[in-house]
Image (cartoon, rainbow, N blue to C red; front, side, top):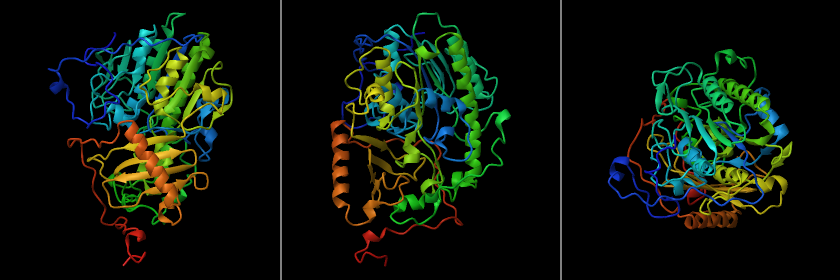
Length: 517
């Protein structure tokens, strides 16, 4: 199976202009654009190696045993990756939402470039995924798991010789929809994490010796609602969860929209329009992650049996983070650290020294160029991301000084506005579009939990102006000065609880006297 390449012409990224509401039906009559070549120049002296990418859903950066965010939560295999490879300690996504983040992983582009700006926008014609370049270079390729990009179902996509997926979010337990295996409907037989691992083991076990392969294993876990494997249910029932200090209401300097979101679908005062205990919720989350960790251990055991473990680049990462009460919120979407920061671990002894740590800010847009480099290929120049391999050996290697973050307002989740943010090594600036409120500015060295909004205190005007200027310069340079308009889609999760937290008042700075009237 080579995939349908006829509906993808040249790469559309970087063309600027307004976002169009593209539909496959509307585009069917258009003359196809010239096909972009999938053959890339080879890097001298670099031999192709096997590549295994394991992507989890909503896995926050500190939810790993060795990070010790809580006093419980076992991840022995992820701990092993960190011990035997490299931990990218400051890894981020450029949009904390499933579809945009996944599209950025596969293309090396920001959401405003690849146009998959939310979970409803379709994949535009001409978008090229990095596995297509690997295919052209002689790799066997496989995709197994959650695709969920552009609301396009579970049909096989270009770049993959083997395909196993499911519709939308899929189901932890067997469902009537089942799986799509190379275009054929197949029943889902068991717990989804274990079943995807089984498919991965089967495909890897059939690889011929001497031919490089690449697999993208995208787990449904740990997306809500969290359902652990039967063998893991209740593992952490007796453990104690430490609630985040920033969960408290009425924090000084907190924007009005954040405080108001407490009483909403994504707030601790009315979560999912019901009630839940954040501590219990986190326990189920970590129990659900256990099967992912066990599955990766099984795959590493098979690679060792085949004599391929040390010659395989294993990259583990999440598609975005998840908040468990921080700032009074749950879920993701925002530019807070717990939302946009992810786990990222890599193992391959020749490339990643055991126990090494990369401190620089790396992101999902860097995945495609980094993996192409590991395969001995020079990434296309129009990718927004960069090859992060030099950082592993040389902390002073040239690298970006800031990262752009973007999230575009969704009508079905109206609590979070359009967000643009600039994340430097020390400071973070957040700009909100379309609301009457204040922005946010944090000194991450002094305030890693983002509780002291410097915008709300005098004396930081020059810093805010500098970062705002840089933010908009980056958007201008990358053709991101347009807000996408989406047709209404999905259920509107817009309710508030009459008995829940009351509405927040305007920040003091909006009053002439400096104090509320």
